[in-house]
Amino acid sequence: MIRINIKELLIPHWKVNDKISKISIDDLLSKNIKALILDVDGTLISGNKPVLSTDIKDWIENSKKYFYTYLFSNNPSKNRIKLIADELDLAFTYSGSKPSKKKLKKILDKIPYSSNEVAIVGDRVFTDILVGNRLGMYTILVDSVDYYGNKIEKNNFQSIERYLAKIITGDLL
Image 1: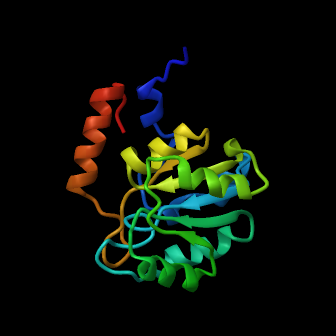
Image 2: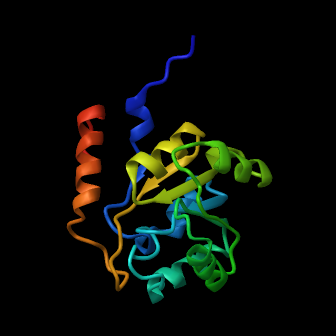
Image 3: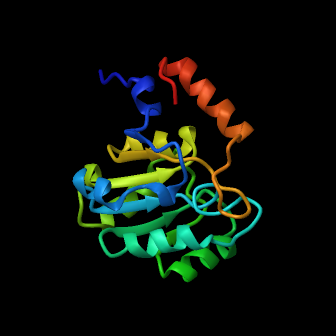
């Protein structure tokens, strides 16, 4: 019988405590990361505005020099995610059904790296971190961004989700 430890599934390997553009490329390289799977809503853009801030766009353009990069979103709007993917010249999946592993596993099977060489970056514990840990990926939790691409200092939904994860795991996220 295989025992799954739910506590381990909810704890990210790295909690950035800032937005995605504050992640150091050198830090990712030092962790032997070869590919990035990026969440879209909340992580790259506001849920209200499908426009990338300059610093996030520049960070992604720079990261593409070092890593295979792919957009993976739960958002059901193909047009919304395609708009961002086209701007960044990246392949994408919409309606990803995270934390289900099925669609993300298909993406991982197509890239030439083992799952522990792939980082998933997202702003949600119960979707991005959970699915990444379920697939043996390196998981990175970032803070959500607002309409202007600034870090949201107080995201009520994210705070509740992290509080629930803390109750389950005993760790402060």
